[in-house]
Image 1 (cartoon, rainbow over the protein chains, first blue to last red):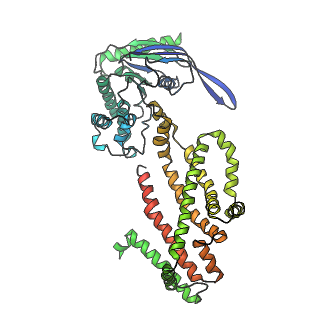
Image 2: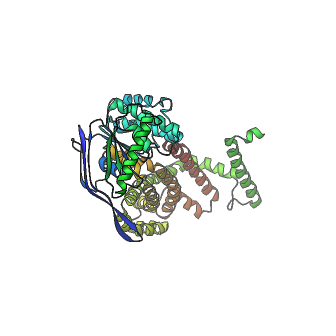
Image 3: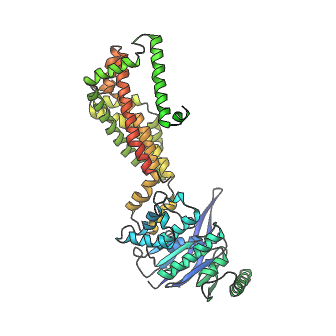
Length: 248
Length: 250
């Protein structure tokens, strides 16, 4: 797989308020291409259809006008998705959760153990998720997302509502895993710092109906520091450009 | 003394001991074996019947209980899961379900005997029909509470429909299966006795009817205690461990 082509002609969301049917136009003519191994952040206000976009790319949401091409047939495509909540199976242990996507493969045991070591939770491999902290659950969800060695990995604000220290650690972990496995990553967030720190490329989404305000390649050297001068300058530049565009 | 009282098993033992003691006292006050025989009378009666045909009848009744139990669990949970998943089918069947829930057990039993004759099939069928609606209701609620977001995880990783049912749907229903099984066992064995009393010529219910016509309270209690003990053993050594195993992650 070399790239993904996304072409959404129209996506509407039916709304039901006080027995009146109305329709909410979410995307109209949203097209973009993502290259192999690229890490793309989508940044936008809440409610701008970020999750919907990921659901469309993942194939969970098929109710839209347009196409998602991944240069492999749909049943063969190797997509992985880390949701906003960890969504671990509470009846499976940590290691069984990581193994879940690749259960049928012969070497699943080995892959899962390697991953759990990478996230530093091998001591907890036989624990059930309910016994683990929120940060640990997310680390396991991250490991599970990498288990099938995906060509495309979708992440839906995976690091929100946890404390800064843990989310910093998780971001470092994500970059480390991404560098090793090199999937295409589509990362969705409403935290601009996070978006700039992680991605090769950042797309700004507008309010509904959502379109891409700005598509920018980030050339900052890694590892990036949110407090460095270059980082702050770039952040200011990007936010002023997009706020100008919004007004127009 | 205090340390002994802290032991859970000991407290349970004490509780049973007091029950027997109260029974003994009342039976002495009443002093009439037809109204209330003493515990020792009943114990002797158990010994006597055990040497006769007690275990034969208990075995027959247990067999009926298990066949009806498994049939009701399988049929009831299948209907319940389908109703929980498909709103339209739920709308169609909901009225029937309420009707079935409110049907008196006695009516189903008598109707089954009238329609199918006084035979084994009619007996087991009557019990099964009585139990199915409650299983259906429990499993329908369980299915409605299923976390759709976990099913999405299965879909992302290209799991087949069957795998999603087996690995994601069913595990979420474990607690509901256990609760249906618990209430089911308790309800079914009571209904089986009524069925046996009305239309069978063996089993615990049949024997109790026989003793009733002779006012033999001692034998009635003897049979009852043996049977209740067996059901309790099943609960302790079969259902409880299963429950623990299936829901240890909670």
